[in-house]
Length: 39
Image (cartoon, rainbow, N blue to C red; front, side, top):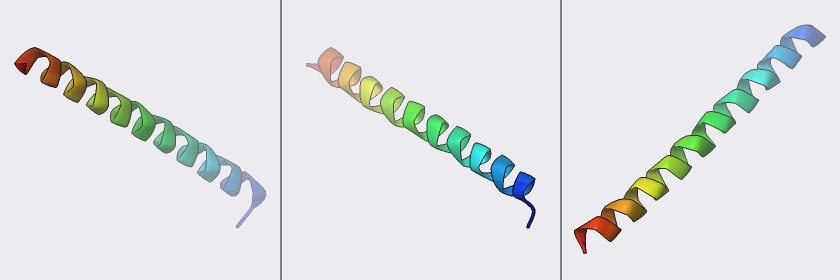
């Protein structure tokens, strides 16, 4: 495995982690809003 392959692979993981964090934040905010509205 060459050095460049490893670099692009880590970049992919950074993007995946970033997307996951955004999804979790959106879900928690959505759930919070939902519980506030349904009260």
